[in-house]
Length: 81
Image 1 (tube, one colour):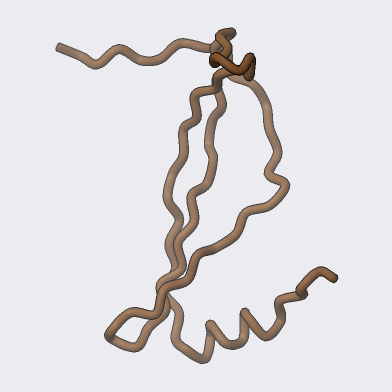
Image 2: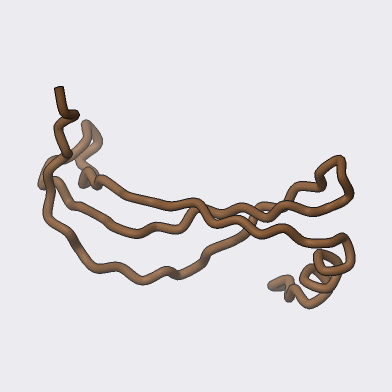
């Protein structure tokens, strides 16, 4: 039996902020992972609080960095005041 695909109307979107999560792994590298939103469907339903219900599709993105590459990225980060 095929799983039923959720229904909804595809709506446009633009990313406002996408951040990486970094993990130091035992072999000395740094693994960067983030989820990237690829599609949003608006169902027309609401949750008990009255908020609209959306269905999302996402795909993982991954990068492998050396410790030096990671330090280079984090040293350029601007921390908002």
